[in-house]
Length: 283
Ligand code: SAM
Image 1 (tube, rainbow, N blue to C red):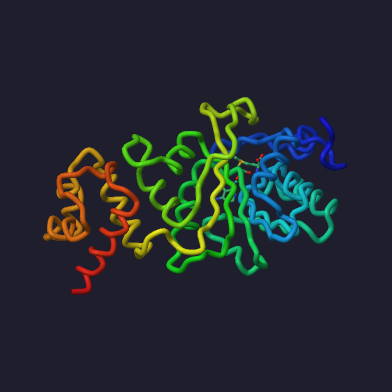
Image 2: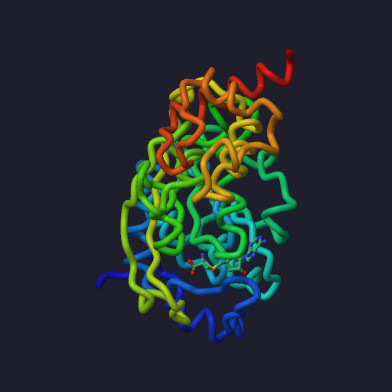
């Protein structure tokens, strides 16, 4: 395999900076730079985009994004041990890489980014879902990003692209497919990572739709879906009764059968229900 840049191999970077992986930070590193370049290509043409990367670690994906021609990369990393290694990459790509040391859940990266913006990350497993839900549920749409190219545990990736009637169908499928086109772009075995995680992983690519597929308020939809799937084996009239004393009437007004279960309800059905619930709370 050919070298993607002139920086040292990642194993040497890890040895030099003593970056032994920490489980508490969800550290499973990608050390094959041809693989990280391939993941970067799943994000599309980056030459006209700023890319937000969460959790660059020793910089494998960062180098993939830069070697694939990203206009600029903003990388947010919590582990201070990684910052000197990332500074070496910034030096090799002058003006192209900005690194912020901090917690991605706390930092607002927008001040440092110029649209169009894409997000690409091998996410720490412990905050991946939370970040995804944040990116999918701003009040206004379209969001600040054009696309998300994200590594998840395979099981989470399957939940994002799941269809009604399947076990994996739930809150993530609805929130992702409501406002984005979501597909699994690549699958990776545990051995692709150092150290190898217990389960397989997958890269999911989501493209923001110009507008949501159906009208609904993001916060209401998110709440309704969370509640409906919290007790997914129950009928909707039981699982949602906390939302309104008159939930049966609301379900019928939304065109839903109160005895149906959450996993039978389409995206359109949940959006209609969120609208009825919102309407009802205003009346
Ligand atoms: N991108 C690197 C790669 O592909 O080899 C590392 C990926 S590793 C799965 C996740 C990275 O996220 C680690 O570098 C970890 O230190 C970092 N991280 C964990 N929690 C974080 C947080 N709250 N904010 C920012 N980075 C975080």
